[in-house]
Length: 218
Image (cartoon, rainbow, N blue to C red; front, side, top):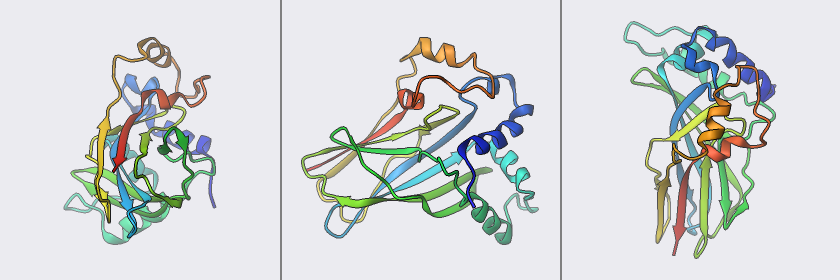
């Protein structure tokens, strides 16, 4: 059973009432991570492997919300880790993906997330999952772009892990184009005044602040 993204945000809001004052403004949750590119045996782009790495505060809140405790070694017991994976495999019906693929400017549909896993990395919750392309794509001579964002900018995603090309990826190159923190400064100032339960009126505003992976082949 899935919920809506609004309900998911409400759960996160509840956890942020004890956060320092900067959490009162958009964005509220900061997530590091990255996107790896999976190619099939014919050299076509077949899937995106997505990683989210939450900060320490959000990690503690999420574990608490699922009634999970760390053991004496500061880790999750395997039974608790698997329970967390089950919880994190429940996606909002209107989940917009965080990884948005375009080829030559055209949006490419992706299947629903699968293969969710969760681990603790230096005290931070790391979540990984796969988004299969509906149809594998031959990218020879084209330009693919994967933007890493959430549409309402409640979550701020940053690419902190270099993209890897997995499988048969001949003559392909990937690089990160980071968001310019000085861009859209007026809009950033406006968003910083929004309360926790307010949503920006600009559709897909998170796209304006997105880090991107640029992929070329051939």
